[in-house]
Length: 136
Image (tube, rainbow, N blue to C red):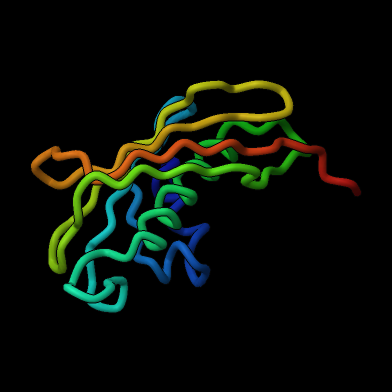
């Protein structure tokens, strides 16, 4: 089973699955996914809710970190910043591409670009993930 299929299986029944995250590509240096803009993810005016965009990007940054974790470690988001540039409308598709800015021993920082299918920038999210050992 390839990494994309493993990730898709791993999110079944949890929040990213509820959002409708569909992974397209995954490697230690990039995670790419898409999100269909459904009515239940929209706010007034049939535009994708900002919180849905942030949750989508947070999912990609967390997954990217998990791919890079050393054995016996886990992660949690400690900071996230979002800039919104244009709306994503009902029925459209948002593509998220997450790439590293920093991959350290105790933290990783990722940047996620959310774009339309035409490649227009919708939002830019920078998040930092804390990396820590799991206590047995």
